[in-house]
Length: 368
Image (cartoon, rainbow, N blue to C red; front, side, top):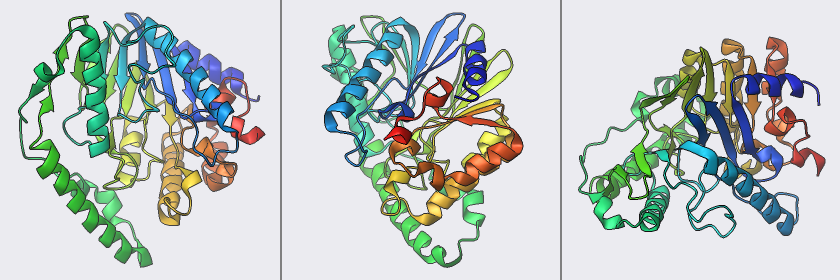
């Protein structure tokens, strides 16, 4: 595969390993970074492909199991794990029957987790508590002892601050957009009033088995020769996206910046593209829009935004390498849907590959 030697060599030079991504046949976006103080794993999770993926169910399950086992091996060796949000393709579930090495692969590690109490939707609120409850029980602690009263009932709405998105010329879509934003504000208010500001919060803690739970949102950490910046919560897709928020991560190794987008779906939001550009990443691990949902759950406007934003990042940043994977690699026409991104990379001399291609294989979806 053209360029895969250069891609693999570049990543290896900074201690970065691609553990599993959608291009390999299971939903995932998991990486590892070797630091001078131990191994760091980001988003150790994997899920089976959706029903529309053109592969039989038994093969989908087998690929998911293969992904989980590979990721679990790295988590077992890691000293630090970062979880950017609580979708199951981004974190291992304690008690998963497919885990082989340990019933609790996180035991004794530093877990830098998305804050489970604020800027989180109802589904992930529950999944975060499921994870912490299991961690507590397996370590001999009582989950109830980790609960505290909400520390605030005041939460700023981030959408009014997305100035670039608001200044875009929406044309005939403007009326529909205003209606969606109105509904989104009502959804946000319900989270503020009925969940974040009222229900018990989970506190940071050190569990009896030595596991340390730390909320990463907006914080920075150092692990020997590697510095990590966890961003404040960004929407998982469009404004007021019902799938919630994620916390992208910037890794700096010996002056080289590696941006891990988590699930921005493009990014779809123009302000997020500008923030990525401002960081001037040398290597970008970027998720794309979920083209398999087009046109029913992903409309043409937001697909266009995601393509335009990725194209702008490439043209204005000119990173040395872009790993373009996750969400995209779930349907056969994905390359056609984002062809402008590939064109921009070619014109700017930017290496743009899927994780599978970087590892020397064709994306599975391209072979089916």
